[in-house]
Image 1 (cartoon, rainbow, N blue to C red):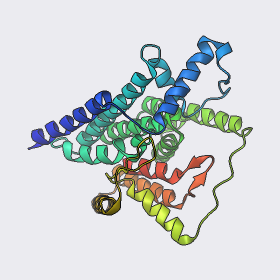
Image 2 (image 1 turned 180 degrees about the horizontal axis):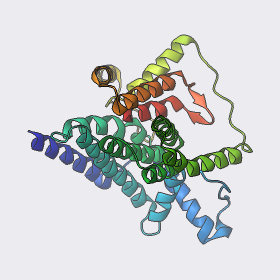
Image 3 (image 1 turned 120 degrees about the horizontal axis):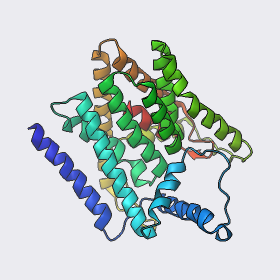
Image 4 (image 1 turned 90 degrees about the vertical axis):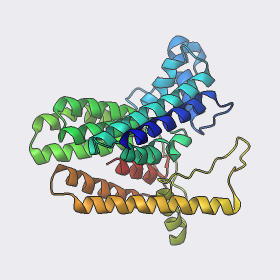
Length: 326
């Protein structure tokens, strides 16, 4: 049975990757903008006179979202680069989810891997083309798997993980740095604490560099009903339903079918939350239970965040996804 589930898991992954590479059209919202950003980055160094932009003089957390397409554009067209990036994200995400499933249940990893992949890999963030965030989530899944298997991360692993996550996305990095720092302090592992210093320095450098750039004013707040509906929408995005939108803005799912799909997604999310709560309650005291409680605290913080902050739309969505990784 375990082999059959594993074969089905990788067959679905292969079909999705083949679709990304072979379908006539692929529209992942922000992904073209990241490919364009990579092209501008290449132009900045290969032909300075053709690039009207300036590379930031400080480290940027989303740097990998620009550097990955920039590296591929040297060998592939823009369209091919977008397809390859999307396919690599899926492949890496399914592999990381499998590793996490195997860490949790070595005898039958496919069941847990399928839940992780469906909620966090083939997710609303992937469909929206949030390249940096998806790279960060994939790294976070892999780090969580290694952490679960080894019970603790050595200082070298903390250093590598923190630097990798910093250059992927700020939210997965901040969550990992906080979790790793609290764990190291609880164990009085001062080498692990010191391993977080380089990424902390980069963070401070970034914040100081960004203070000179103005932020947009936050969107006007609605009533309590609108706020609760928006948070419910945020939580529902952990479910499997996505509402495809064509390039002309028309939606491909509407009417009664839309509400049926939303209801099914709500059922999946409720089952997932219930299973996680039940599993947390049954955990014995120890490192895994502390990690689970930390993830619940992150989820609670995500629900308190405003719908717009620091030029980021719905930052709570990112935090909630990272909490689900935990």
